[in-house]
Length: 310
Image 1: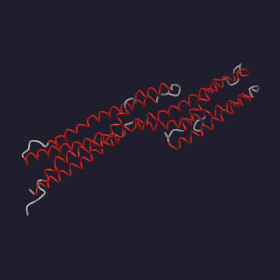
Image 2: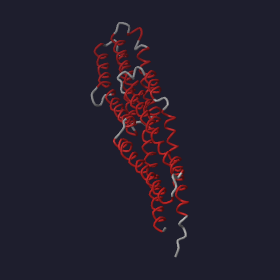
Image 3: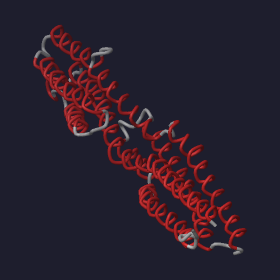
Image 4: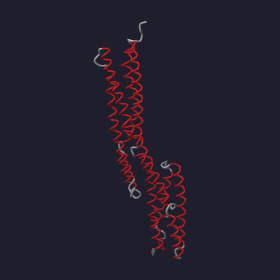
């Protein structure tokens, strides 16, 4: 009798410990993927699109400025509305991008520096227009402005490219299934839930042998509950596929000129991932229910041996 009670206490302890470990691992693995849908849709996508829009607008504005200043209508039309519209778009995009947390403090500081450089670039273009009657001086200002925009390493576009690469590096982290998540889903979660299933099965066999009862309904219910890990795994796979599709969309070269369409496509890719992310809250509850079923199933058997004969 004393050995039976000790066995049941050890088995209960083992089951509860493995249950806690399995629920914790599942929560971390599921949350590690599901949380990224919000980060991609609400932070990375707007930030990447704003920087891409600024790059595209600056390219276009410089082309428009060159055409206006060197064309036959410079005296009549000036720099033109197209140039000013594109420059305004670039400034607005930079202002919005500065508000983003994607890329961290370094990215925001770079964007503030770039905004100042764009203002200087605009002033130089205006000087080129003021001196439009002097071809040599006009061309010198225009050449300097273009170089300021397009220089390697420290030009405005190069700086924006560096910021965008940092943003896309963050995006890759959000949309890729890294080795930690792969280890959790392919090794840790299956191992813990498999161990728990084996322990429950062996406990049922021991109880049937010792107490001559065909099945313990509480432990049987706990065993059935383990199947819930399968739909959670499927939801994770679906979320990861949608994140990967969103990441591919944001890596296209034409997103600067197609910001609205790109944002809509990303939203379509991520549609449905938010309610999948909400399922993470059910994992701790499921773990608590699983532990309760195990406790209810074994505690009465342990209580039968509470008072030992002297």
